[in-house]
Figure 1 (cartoon, rainbow, N blue to C red):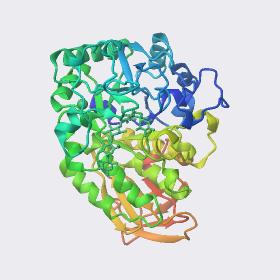
Figure 2 (figure 1 turned 30 degrees about the vertical axis):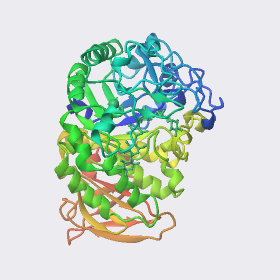
Figure 3 (figure 1 turned 180 degrees about the horizontal axis):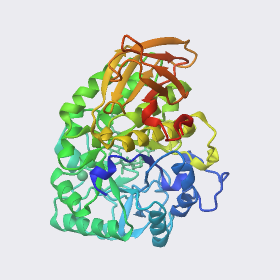
Length: 475
Ligand code: ABC
Ligand code: CA
């Protein structure tokens, strides 16, 4: 699909090996520290699509699908899929070509595949690499000469040297080599058409030159979002000139500074709004996340459930395309790689938890907002109120905007009323808070009385905008 079409989607990120097994087991052992394949597969995902769709997601991001290094390494097996060795074979641990096609059909072609072009994977040192084991890049000249990235602010080094370490080297593809570029172009065309892939996540985007990406993206012909792992908005946004979208790392850090403890302040987040808008070509195409398979889970930073609700709400309602990482809705608490790659099935796909239900309610709100006014998506969010522990945001044109309020106060905080102006709703407008389903009325001074309690976020739409939607029983 096109960037325009992706703008309206909401993505559930999962690791294919860890989301669901074809036998529907919810007890199969998966000890993250072992680094084993735990048995998740494309068939397994098909079996558990309801759990995802019931939360309101409209796309799924899966692990890289290609053949990976087969040995057990110091870090375990390549269950995550980032240690590619053969572009033209699938990772049979995840299933067959027919299974992958069946998944795409089941998703109505709403799958985002993860693409690794920067490197292959090798179980051992640089000197020991046997290039003939790789396909189609089986010559030493297809790779950059070995060097390590000792300085991440040296861009030539970031692009031209190798990731990995002496235990698992990641031989760095010479993406300037015409053979490498042409092979990648024809491979991605085939992959997209064989499996009806609809969007791609470009791994290690900052480690590959921009000229390569322009050409690769043109060959792929579908929406792409790149992983440029940096907190620097100017550096990251530059990549939006060569790919449609980028993972919003520059937002991630201020979001954590605000919400990962009850001492957090909203100032960095308020600043990030303006900085990102001036640095990026189009912030409404960025992909927003608060967890992924490389980062410490939110619940490993704080166990406070109200903060977890705030961070989920912010992720879904921010400008751009939201991504929730499998397990976030179950309050999983793994600390970093590999602890953050817990099997989703061990939570039994429970739909009872607060976080599962908040994700569902907020995806539903967002889906409603964009259906009553498609221009909602292109409207840039802005802060209409902030104090050190609170921020209120507006997104969308009147009268169908969403006004949302976030706080770092945390669980157990007492009740208080905030009076929020500049909501865009006139005096006497009736609005509904979508998490509690309580209504409120804009008062005669033009301010919305917001009842805060227990450190919970608040999300408002007008009663008219949700009328007939079933949201909060509005039929
Ligand atoms: C394995 C083991 C680990 C072990 C590690 C040494 O080796 O599993 O237990 O600790 C894959 C696997 C991993 C595996 C690696 C290496 O391969 O998933 O399990 O780790 O073999 C992508 C993927 C990631 C994937 C790869 C490699 C790349 O999402 O899952 O890993 O295919 C760098 C890359 C980034 C990469 C990330 C893991 O490493 O740029 O593409 N992710 C700084 C640097 C970043 C760097 C980051 C983390 O540190 O600038 O480039 O990311 O090392 C901000 C700054 C940032 C700074 C951050 C930390 O702070 O602005 O610049 O990032 O404030
Ligand atoms: Ca590179």
